[in-house]
Picture 1 (cartoon, rainbow, N blue to C red):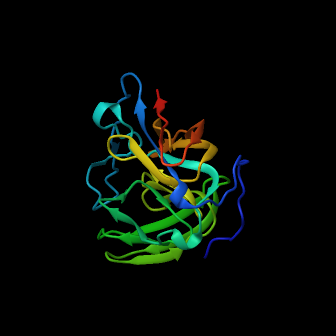
Picture 2 (spheres, rainbow, N blue to C red):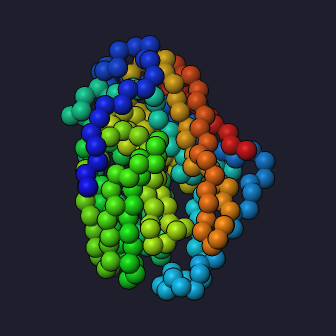
Length: 245
């Protein structure tokens, strides 16, 4: 089933939404964890799940150099790029490997082809939800190694990928439309380039890191979201950092 198409409008911009990229500035920064990060215990895989090993990482809180937090989504609320033609359209792959999704968090632009690939020799079922209301967008089986499904995602917002067979498997895809979005790297850093001068709301989203197991199934905490007002100047770099604790 293909996703519903609708227009999502968020926030009020203080400058025109479409401006020449040549006059743009850059937004950079880090997401870090303050204090001692909580221990992230691996999930003990029940013996019924053959081919998945004895334990897997939940990938909920990935800490790198200088307590940088990977897998945080950074986006500018409501701002569109100068033109749809200027956007690159890549094939984004969510690879099911070792009974986990790789990468764990992705940001894609409108029109990108989204591919779910099964690199395991075990049965996976890809169940994709629109995270805002947990409604099902896609639900399909990938029973064999090398099986893949290609879809085009159009509706902006956050999507969650789950596996109906393996309850610990989850990942997130943020669809930015023709807006500005990225995911922090292993050291918690990010960069948004070609941003039109103006004042905007910058959003940091992290999936949350608390996990508990009930009845053998993992239960995940709510996502964490923070915002900052930033002012971008032509040809200059604006720094905006976020801290989790």
